[in-house]
Length: 411
Image (cartoon, rainbow, N blue to C red; front, side, top):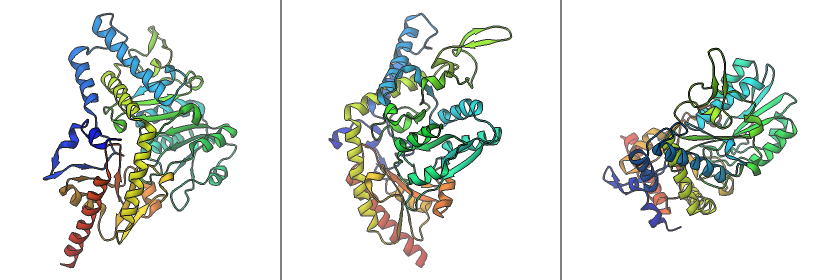
């Protein structure tokens, strides 16, 4: 990868923040957008802004073609069998809620067990929590190993004859842990359970093949993969989606409407009621083009190198606690840590004055914070446009912050 050339595609990275060159290390929250994606959005709004599927006029046809071409790109990107399995949503949260309300709400019953882990983002915890309350199902948690990984023996022991549904993150947004989805899916299917994968932190960092994973559902967001905000994807196996009821009713998702009854369109449109997120979907398609030009394997190798370098440099800092697996092969480009006697919010605020953007807080993972026995952590997360120099800026910033706060406490 020619990192200097890649950075030129991202206008936002050329700016200064508080008098320093921007070092953006909050990619697990959202990624920056290449100019080609920004240009795609501008072109849509300036030249063919129209509702897809509804108009026979030129702009409507062009919008329809571009919208459905984006669906085809997503299908190829994750290797789904057909475009009918690709549903556009507002993001990972919307996708997971759709599954919770439609699939779990219809097919699970009182006493059935839903299995998740304590490392889940709130968007992959609360929907199942609330669905379980509503139908009387039992929510259970697979225990985590001390280093924040999942032991398959614990998965086996957590399953029972009543386990009907499992939802699990592919990559933890806090620990960076890459979970063994293939093996978990095999165990679940032997038990007759359906598996949903939160792929928000994985699809843009390494190749994800839904047919290889054999998962039943998979959800992700466009804004974490250089696409626009407000667009996401739910993949589902066609034979499952066909039996699920829509959860939003209105225009576009209908086939026939009478005074007292209605019928629905075929997949995927029965789940896309109302005016769809046209610009977002088209922009996501352009982001996929950009990712594939670079190559997911190349991105994964680059992030492993960065994670290894960051782990080495951070580990040398006195008084630091690093969470999650230490082996770069077991983790994505996310490193969460704390510095003794420095609150993560104070650290993030200090680093911002140096032009360095990191995350601080519970990262929408309060149960995991409790498991780690902390109230909050700092998090640095990397993407294809980050460099070892960015990490060096981070390390120097942390060292300066330590001295600053040590002096402040001494006073």
